[in-house]
Image (cartoon, rainbow, N blue to C red; front, top):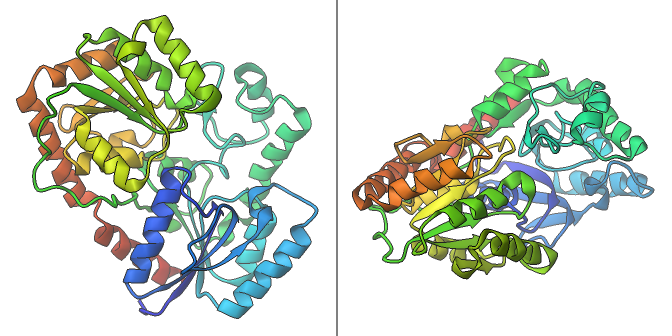
Length: 396
């Protein structure tokens, strides 16, 4: 593959909002270190000054009055910077995708399911369970029972139409990249060619330790992520309330404002507010320090995660994980090897698994070692980059 290749990445956010953006920023840095040139088109946030970039607000919207001007500006950017290939990440606008397909070979990473599911999550809000069906017009009936889409009929139909329209242009995308086996199977369900459907898990940007960090003297379990019902944060609190008084909890994420108030209220109702600590979003460096303080990371998500980067980062530090068996989580969380898998929406099982690790420091260290080894075997940046470069080369 040519070392001076230019890749234009397109994503809604230029700043880190979650795991997908953290991966994208790390990916750009890794590609640049490998001698490739990277560019970024985005709708929100602030792009690194060292990166050739352009703000295209329409990336974040299904439609809008400025789409014609945005497409003109994007076309001029592509003409001036001459990328060899366009890598689509998180965006909402089909017009932008069509313009990219007309300009250059394109690949897409399915960080979520926005082009496979009208609500982008394959998650039923009413049942709080993963949705097994394929996205399409039948979702108009399903959402009446499961409340998975907006209750505004016109907007709901727009999202369903978005899925249908994407299916028509999908064959023109040279490669779809799935971060997990679950996400890959979802792509297979829509009939995309197997030879262009690539399984490529995210890499872990934290260098794996040689040995697990020393077992913390203070028993502390942690939740790091968005404060949203589909992330299962309520089950984290319920599990914390079932654990002994000497077990403390740490929650890191968008814990300020109204969400913070609701967390404290639930913790008070459960009787665990005195052993709970809240922190706002932390930097990558801070996250690593916080992981070192944890006895166990809890990953209680109840929607089908495409993978779960924070779990990889915990394993790199030798921190065992207790999580739910949903989506791509079983690709990296191996039951009774580097932590424990539990059924979703079962805080009692979560608490039992956490307590099993806390009661056995030797088991905790062994699970930590196994996690480190798994990172070294499957989730290193150089392994990921080699496979991604092969995908890029095949698309050209």
